[in-house]
Length: 460
Ligand SMILES: Cc1cc2nc3c(=O)[nH]c(=O)nc-3n(C[C@H](O)[C@H](O)[C@H](O)COP(=O)(O)OP(=O)(O)OC[C@H]3O[C@@H](n4cnc5c(N)ncnc54)[C@H](O)[C@@H]3O)c2cc1C
Image (cartoon, rainbow, N blue to C red; front, side, top):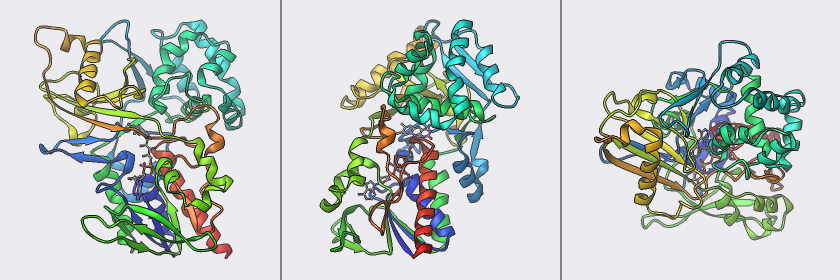
């Protein structure tokens, strides 16, 4: 079958990869001139990369790790020490760590929590541990039921002291969905905690050794094209054209740079677009259908990725850091963490600014000024002395609508990959799969869509 796929993010590429494995011919059409969607990256005039987001791969990403294996590129994942490192706002420039010992799960996670005495007191740890028991015993069923609560509400329900939220979970919540615990669904944090506690290496983190566009997306494209498929950049879908029966007749592709529009026909059509542009493009007859109406319950959350290049080294920490700053979420010195960005003499910080709703319309200069101010707390030695580190250059990448905002109740709005239209499917991190809106979720959704297409085909 010829399968036309709109969008070359990880979900669209994964769907195309698994369709190629089944002997089908995918044609992926990407609106922009760059692969990867939310993992897209660009090289500036100096040859330095900047990215849509600081991206971390977890041990609890089985489908992503399998994909790396199938592409033969496992060596591109740079695994870090099994620990989580948090800045301590009350003692600027210092860190508190959750070190996971080499023990089976959940013992290694329990030990990591028990051995950290900077952030939580013993009564707080015990109260939190008791609160987590239903999630660990009843598993995903319980976790899904908790989608009716925000994480703050869930903590209150379990009589967990507010300090636990302040010390640990504001940072975790911002890292997972770019919003605070009073907004995020309890399901999101409980899903992550369950994975981290139940799988020995679930919370172990890896950085890619270069830009996701070149080091991850391009090998998927090569895999697809080697097997007869196609991936076209600068090919925005303008409209889904319908037959009289409401099924898809073709994708109308907008002609750019003076070229005329083109109609691409295929046996099967897939949207791998994010939910926000998909909602706008739905043909009128589909808008009446309950299945498509549920998409109105999902909306992307804003986030900003800031890159700062300095004239000196700020830190030698080779890991992700949770800033615990009101302005920022996680950050890393990419000159330590990523082989292709390595520099022994100069730091390049990549920092995620979240929640970003009040910042998304500000200028890059305003954003960088506020970020530099925060660095006085994160690196007081380097920014408060007589000879502060000098900023050489910066890039700011704003994503006004990134992953869907995972507020309480959103699970009910996440659609299945199978639509009521017989020759049209959805894929993307927002579609229903067990790994939240993440790279793992995107790759898994692509695989599920490919499987759904194959199984419907075998029934016909
Ligand atoms: C700042 C930031 C940090 C993140 N950090 C992490 C992390 O550490 N770990 C993690 O697992 N995940 C992280 N994520 C989430 C992860 O990037 C996404 O969940 C994942 O990449 C989404 O993939 P997707 O294919 O579903 O969607 P997308 O990547 O959005 O792909 C959709 C594609 O469709 C294209 N498209 C849109 N309209 C059209 C059209 N009309 N015609 C053709 N193509 C179209 C878009 O251009 C895009 O390429 C982060 C995201 C951001 C923004």
